[in-house]
Image (tube, rainbow, N blue to C red; front, side, top):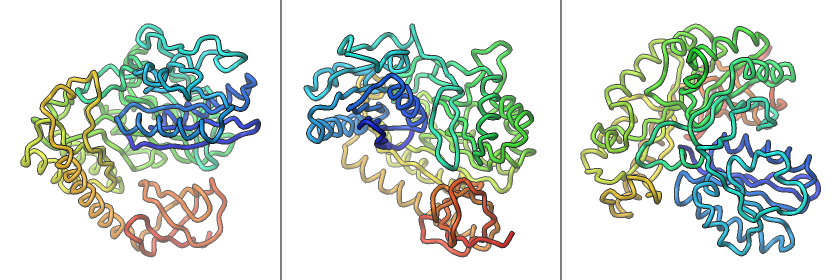
Length: 427
């Protein structure tokens, strides 16, 4: 689960891809852009949608209507998780010319020539697209993203994503290493491994290798790679190999973003999560013991059905008890077709109030984290002029000129409550 992200990518011939949702969606949008451009699609807007919340779907519909007003003659294509899960929603919009499922958006010829069928959405479980790290994907001037896994075999009661992505499937380790080596050779300072359920990587491959083994193999066989980072991971599946590499390999960046969702055991059971509050705290302690400079982030949901004041307080306290520095807060949003949508719902006003309390606690945790950074020497990957990212994911406002992609030695001089301020140290 991640925050909604909308991004327009204008290119030649007025071809745009607009992305909602996670980094994996953003990665796939770049692949869509490359494929559509190669197939000659022009004067078109492709919406790569997210289904994680009802708000994400609402924002996509709103953006589609706006695009049609601004570009009345453009071809409008809708794809992504929301299109896969509820194609009728977008097929019913007069503004939409075509709806493509998550498998269909990756098919050769999907964007070539005239529209073959207005709605092309197949059974994602019967015909899932493979995880392909070598597909054209999201690259910034500073870092590159590599898809190593797609889909999910778990059925959390609040989540519709498995119905948009299908079952879990992994990219072969050799393909991943080859892609990472190529990206490092191109000069990318950092590579991020991404997926829907990243820690399940390997469970469908011969011998069932672990994510930790993949990480170790990448770092061994791509010695020119400066920094390797993991996207969001499931706290229930961190394997011993990953813990070992985290402790021993400085190029694996000291930041983990955990899919925790709640700090109350009863709510975790009703969410059908596979970890307890105690396991969350034990994991936080274990990774810090392995890597003392590590920072933790997490996703937390406010107002899950049946959540009492005491249950919410357990989640609120988790921010401090687990030592979280970066927290993504989500007010619960019922998704049709999920078990949680059928549970007794809380008042929307109460959900919003609880989400705001979580955000306030998250802001305090971030402020405390930034306080601890002042005076430290860090290495920051420049993301854009004046902005860099430290090893532990702290955002840095950099005083001085540096090109995106450079890794600078920096001294943290202060902060503004949202990001640290840093000056460049002499080489």
